[in-house]
Length: 463
Image (cartoon, rainbow, N blue to C red; front, top):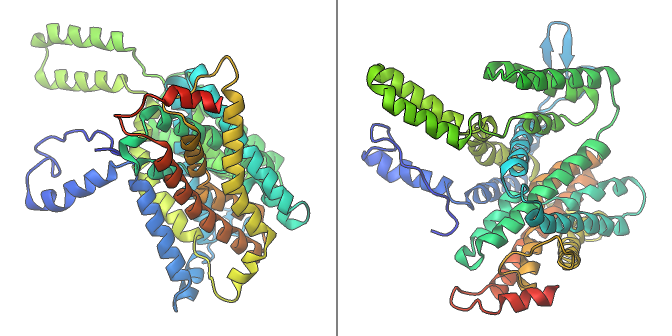
């Protein structure tokens, strides 16, 4: 089915692999849903809707009381959330849980650089050029509406692309959007993630503590050293990763950068090449008669694991947790905006709302389309099959669904709650509109498999 990834078979002795009534009626349907590309976006949308409904219900005060619950972590003489950072449940979600999300992002970027879409430099160049346009032009649009004052610091908000929503929208088109176009959008979104991470690290970190920053660098050096020594004892990395997060948090650099750094430092190449693995399995098959069966099974499992990189194994474990738990919790904590009290009226006349909204829609579409058009004129780029003007507009529009990272940067850019709410209104409305525009143009621009003869001519029209 379009929009799904292959679902591996499970052993018959497992609950989901069996034929029990509960597994058939509940477990297996849920498992199939979680393998659909759009599933993460659907759950994220539900969480955001719950947050909005809750924040505008008679129980709205409980929403704000919950996420603004104060707490303090005390370890010996160390006080976290005392004289230093002010800690709330919302802070825990945005700084701690989102560090895991950005760790997964770091793993994905490392994998793409080593063995994925970003490895083929020629194929990756065009979407990376498009991503630059999709970051620069939205920022310029926001700056046009907010050239000075406290609001000017929000220029990074419309630069972001929400991969989960963007991929989810495109997957709704099924086979009408071919794989090369999906790869183009995914590569663009990954490049956008890299840009957003750099923006957060450089422009949205403040009150730098040199001692804590040096501590974080030392911990990172220890992690890299252990990697060079081929020491892969996971508990050590959990302890060091937690220490790295804490040092980064206290340094003034946003704590999520620790997650990205740890992800990028994780090995993305298998311990053995495919040829070495095949040779080892053949040896095991020949010599297995003289080895205990249990030892044969254990050795075979270890050989299979050695064919999968550490980064890929961790990513496979954490990706469902990130997509189906952490991001929905983040949306629940951050998407709730009380629409009452004249907020919608204030937002309608707010340059922040307009800067974010126009930036995410017009800035993204114009930036991605124009830079792709320029990029296709370069001799070292290749355009994906099926790239037509209307299709490109549709893909550019879906990249304007900023949501997760846009909300995240909003909390970093502003201190005043009214400006934060106005920015969130712009993000929510623009993301919905960008998704609708994307679907319309993808529908108009894509063709069925029976009518694809004019694709080459259409690519020439763009170039």
